[in-house]
Amino acid sequence: PVLVIYGELDWIMSKQEHEYIVNVVNSMHPGNAELKIIKGMDHHFSVYSTLRESFDASTINYSEEVFPAIAQWIGKQTKR
Image (cartoon, rainbow, N blue to C red; front, side, top):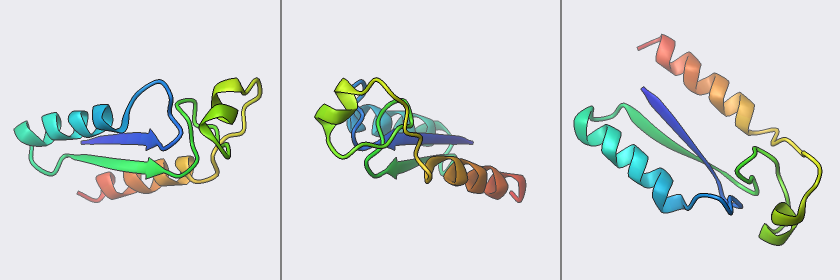
């Protein structure tokens, strides 16, 4: 099982790259990969208002959504 997490303000990798990972895994193991998109999050799991703010940031502002989403996904996997 694979959880692919994409932050909509990621300026390092594109959404298409994340979707590609999901498609590759699912092409060999249907249903094993899932894409989770986090609003306002960048590549480093920090949340900002704009892409420019994310790019220029010198501080970390961790997403409050991402870590619970990971824990929930792990919980689902342990019940499989």
